[in-house]
Length: 360
Image (tube, rainbow, N blue to C red; front, side):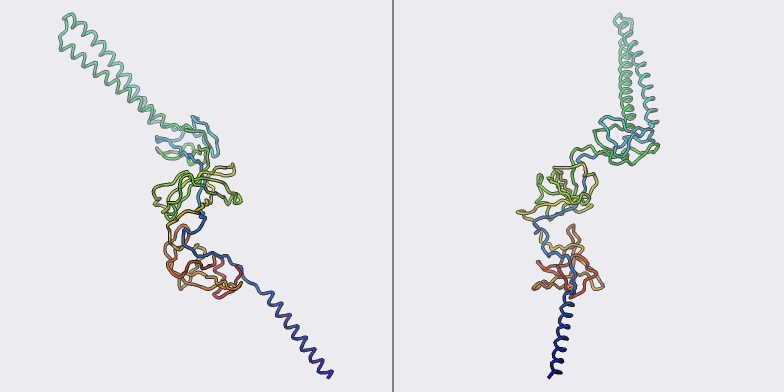
């Protein structure tokens, strides 16, 4: 009897140890956390965010209207300039030579005009006294008229050549700050070549491209929110100021500009920005199913996603091959393989296994 008691105690102890070990092992089970998104048709989101670039509302490309070698260049990056300030000039050798020749022709034309005027006056007096014929008087009038026209032509030529000389100078067209410098002194530049960029605007705007699926619900004056990753995701109020009526063929999107209503000095031209539009109560005509690009994987069999089956607090992933259409700004268009409302993983696809249990 005593021996039986020892046996029962031993068995009970083993069962207890096994249960504790199993419970401990169960507690140590690790579930991989995954990010996910819900499959939906493009345009059903209440909010949509698009990326853009910050820039002032007035950007001026500075360039010469003539060609030549830069002989003076008082432009530095970040420099503040005032309207009318001389910033750069060319050697302008050819333009100055042409101006000198035009001035010479003007002086010669003035001399000929004065001579023909004196001859006309003298011939008129002789004609009035009967000492000169009518043909001589008419000839003198024609000579004066020709000399006067030549003089006026020379004046216009001088004016044109003076303008050509002025084309070799760059004056600040507005108050502003130099945002970019692309040339330097002694460089040979051509007419129209940008040598610097002037930020002359007072307001900060965001330039972005909008896809055709939502462009018709974006109107001027529409309020949006702007955030900058470089500014710790600070948000700023903004409104739409421009909506392009035609598509940009390079990006296949419609250019849109929004103006920040409460800008700060922290916002610099060229910063990347995220612009969020509120499309609640807006009817968006787009029936394409679109999923993020980071949700799509690819192997030898084709492109796939991991569909998440979430049943009774237990989530598992299933590898699902899909057929994709074109790549849009929002992601890949799905032609087949998914239905609306399914959940798919959006991160760590390389480490997931078919049938793996995960934590959302």
